[in-house]
Length: 296
Image 1 (cartoon, rainbow, N blue to C red):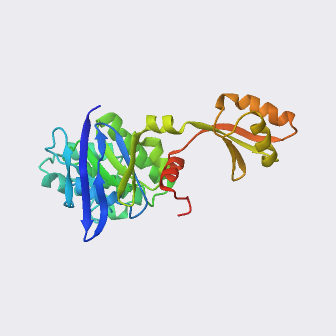
Image 2 (cartoon, helix red, strand yellow; image 1 turned 45 degrees about the vertical axis):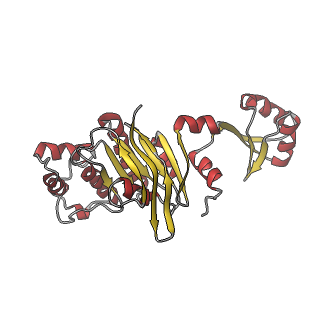
Image 3 (spheres, one colour; image 1 turned 180 degrees about the vertical axis):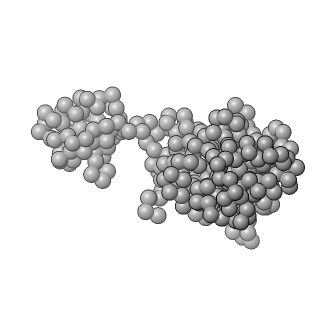
């Protein structure tokens, strides 16, 4: 798969403060690329630079391929005319981009699931609908790459699902590359193909879904009536990478011995309330790299 966008030591400083330093990102064509980091980590700064909204202090970015349409952008709230319909908002943008026809605008509305909104003013849309309109505005002119900063922030579960379905449709049916940032790592993990982790203005890791699975693997999660005793029993089986996490016993090796572990615990007089094999999540991996915790 070819890269559609790369950066070379991309850096942005505000005085002496480095908002983003020596960022080297590789985004493949036709994928969803998830950019992960806390508030203030540098995600928006990076997105603004590669979108042409902010000039880098040093370094560069390169768009590979036909860039006549530029990069579609949705950073912060979508700029909409609240008293105008979704169609009229898109019509105005498309006229400015010299790509307006009624059929074209109707197609954009269909793509983002707003084809049935009629003359309803955009100001009365739900937050999720406004975000989808913002995505449609970013798509005007047919860019090959769109950049979306926290598009699901503040949405209810229904709104999140609608945005997720829209992004999957753009990738799978339209072949559009999407760079998206989000704090909701569980949702990002459902759709992204590759990830970059930003921490304190530095890109500390970049990996694909396949690499994440290969690096992190799986573990056995066990809930018993006596986790301390269970810990001792499992270690007596020659399994050393075992620990108590919360109200569970976590076993990080010998996954293929799950049934044997269950039998040994039961034969040892321990009640096993729950035992299942889990994949290490994107959230687990993120916190292991950044040294943070879920309460921050």
